[in-house]
Length: 345
Length: 165
Image (cartoon, rainbow over all chains, first blue to last red; front, side, top):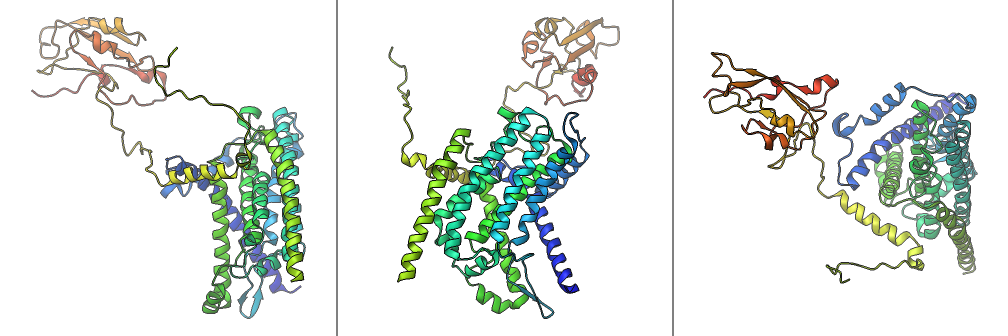
């Protein structure tokens, strides 16, 4: 391993890390702003111009609050819970291809931290791990309500991972690869997977709402029934870590959806732009396009949150097991038939 | 019995049909509604900078009035305290001395006049009870404070600013 490679990867990891954290922090502000605008209000506007420093103020507040660890909790697990939630939501972005390779001083630098050839499986593993943070946190609190919130989160995640995986299988049949990079490259220009897998995308979208515990599937957090949810006993920065993990998950889900279905860094007319701007700035524009797609998805998440009421718990399970799984299987069958017919022709 | 207005609608609960069970059409319809609201006029009033206009008969902080010659109108009859349903008003009466004629209108005046703003319910009965037109609830919002004792407003806060005739 040469030094330049290590430096290049380290720089990329730092940049992606910073972008994730900044986006997650400003998602909290965006959430409140969007909530305001959808309800004919203006949202926070006191901290800095237009409320720009609100995330800083919130973070500072969380930091200076007293952190209470309940006496009867298992202390190590109580601390491990939010840490794990934060960790798992951060490591997911390692396999996202953020752009085409850029050329710096004659070196071709890949804008993907790790080109794992089973990138999609890696993402699935990380997303499934995410529920452990919530589960451990809820269990370690030694509180009935926390435990119930954690159980809800766990059963919801497990139920919705199945249709999510099935919808991905149809996508894999269409793309013939598990590598995120190859999937992104195949969608060159406007050749996006959404046009081949519209039903699969809708299933994936619904499931990612459930996986990130967002409305209309935000049952793990419920003031009316569970006092708070899995984080009832948490305060201060550990509480902040849970909230932050939720927004990071949303960012990751948006990135995955943009990459798998909406072409990632590809956009129509990218060849022309790349030939005009050269091998350094062209791919960076692509990265910007990917970020715009991600922000659009984050906006969509929030838009849905401030529109739709939540499902009842039995409706949630009904939708997951009786609607989405059969639909996803039907999608696989249809995809298989279509692929076979097109191969014969 | 005949309904007075014909606006009553009988809703019947029926199981959702296929279109409703898809959820998505209804969700997109709702999202259209919320999206339209994004561009509507915002109702927010930026309070410390912009103050909302009060209605004509809005009842705010009390003020003890002066007459045309700048003398305090209150004669400490105690009718306001008596009418007050929250018992927020107390006063101590005193007799007007020689040489104070330009300060107080009647022979008797309120040496101490206190309203407990935490008790006051701003009903305006004191205003109606006053025979001398001495008290009106025409002031601004009573501001917040840190200590309970600071909510007991004396004459220094209640009496109108003296004016030259």
